[in-house]
Length: 485
Image 1 (cartoon, one colour):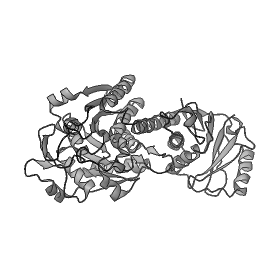
Image 2 (cartoon, rainbow, N blue to C red):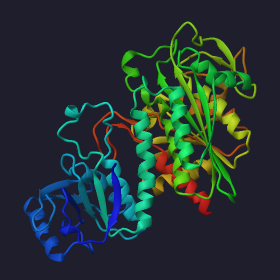
Image 3 (cartoon, rainbow, N blue to C red):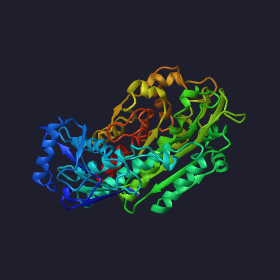
Image 4 (cartoon, rainbow, N blue to C red):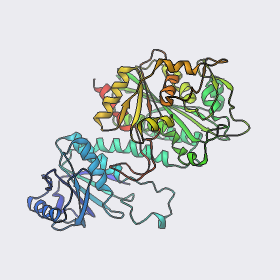
């Protein structure tokens, strides 16, 4: 099991497969209290001879001369802001050799928050999903195996624990996203969530298909009725004694999205195992709140369905009733995420939380508007801005977007209260305007993480190919801010 621990030993004397040190903006080895001056000078000379860059995340690997490590990974720190330290540690973690058993990190930091960011970046940069790889097929470039021990020099116990909680939540989210839909479907997802919840003292309740029908969850049922693997709704609750407020989190959990009868092109289906990224994030945010003992109530709602075409699938022109009674004309079965979220939002708000956030890989339009690394945030202006501030603090790219009132007119239906698609314009905003019709006066924000949730390209910073864990760090910071207010 990968571990992160602090060390008070001299970093250069620890037997390790790799020692990570930083290069400051001047190109010199960044001074660290556990790295002797003579060792820093020797490594600095090597860095100069190789024209090693101090640009954030640029890595130069040299033999472990003057140290007890097999190799030294020199990584640029730029101006050494918290975000740059996190990114640098993530880049360096990928250059520590094949299956290292021990890696020492001797990057200096100003405070616990920065040390936590370094540990977090290293663990996430080293992340790999190899559950389905045969032993002989894991590749020669594997940066770690399950036995890697990461030692963070100079950090406090609280900084290490914080890094483990945050990185663990992101990695757990990535694991679920990366799991093939053959194995991760609504019932198995619900079982996983219940198991994690029991282990941490988090309450869990699951609605099976019969209970969903009895209680009137028409959105989740409509989306999931075409699959032989029937939908679920899971409610999680972390409620510490004395918590003064509650935040509800609603996650889109489409374990595979074919588009239903409004079938997607084959190429567009290749990454649709990631359409449950919002629910995965919500699950691991609630679990992280419990691990960190955050003094705030958090409820998580996992809206789980598999969107498949079949003789029992929902048809374009069907009219369904969302939980609470509002009717929706379904004109495109590939605009399904908003239907399951509508159910979840109405039910979550029924409990009168102080704030409700939904997290969803909701629209392809998000990627067109903001690209593959920036999520869109819409909703009540004050809550939207609070989410953006939390994202800025943890260096996660999110951007505030409007909710134009005129778009509601494009959702008018001749036969129902609403239709589930607009006129094709401003698709990300139109989807959010649709959701707004189900939140009433609640304080609410919608996070569209469609493209940022799954990295189809190469690694960068601490982000690796596949599931990214988008939104987890931001929402955890949002909860911390409220818990500490």
